[in-house]
Structure formats: C-alpha cells, structure tokens
Image (tube, rainbow, N blue to C red):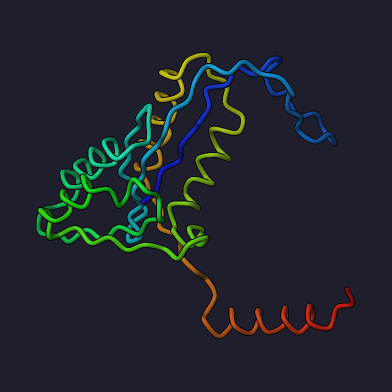
Length: 186
C-alpha cells in the first residue's frame, strides 16, 4: 500500500494537442491549478484488485481511516500484510495504537529508497499514464470522480503483476550488465 499525494487538478490551456501522423504528442506548457487530492491505495498482489480512498490531506488521521477501510474490505478470516514505505504517518502513536488492537494487520516496511519494490507503485504508473498525465480537470471533485471511475473499471478485471523471468535469467542479465559497465571507460 502507498499514497499518491499531490495529484493536481489541472486545466491545461490549451488542452493536449491531438497527435498528427508522424508527430509526437505535445503538451501545453501552461495550465491553471485547481487544487490537489491524495490517493491511498492497497494493491492485492494475488489478484490485482485495489482498495482505495481519496482524501484532501495525507496525515495519520487519513491513514487510519484508510486502514479501517481495508479492515472492512478484507474478509475477517484473512490476515492483512501491508508493505509500505517509511512515511512518518505510517508510524505515529495513533497508528501504532490502532494496529496494536488489530492482530490481523502486519506492517512490513521497504528499505529506505526502495519503495519501487512495492507493486502499488507500478499500479500508480498505470493510473498516471492512462488517466492523470493527459487529464484536464477544472475541480478537485471532477478529478476525484475520474480517479474513482478509473479504479472501479480496473477492479472489474484486475490483473496481478507477474514476473516473467526466472531468478537465473535476472541474475544472468545483471551479470552481463555489470561486465559491460565495469569495463567502460569513464
């Protein structure tokens, strides 16, 4: 799970120019900023489904509300393992007190600087590429509505991320890279 904070409701002026054959897509350099929203999302690595909530702020209070939403969404007989980064809101007294009363919740923290290991970050990439990068929103409420609709559509047929390479293939590729880069002249 993670938060994508500071998602901007932007009214691009003029809107993204349509692509013409042989020309790359272009963006306007100017826009009107209409506020921000923060998306809290938990990605189920087994089936690819996403539990999400949008909040105007990203504090421990909102994180606790999100944990309660996860608690309600996940069947009671299952344990909940959350892989998250070291954001200070994940470790406040309020959160620790709530977690102490929730024995089925288990927090796992990625090493500092390694939140890319968390699969929800890849899912945020899909959201950004398919909705946010080209989005035009005159109000935060419209942005929230579009994000919610996109997530609902994702959850109709969610897909987990699957590594297609074996451990040996990954290590061989890394070894080839290291061999090439260690012989490079700098």
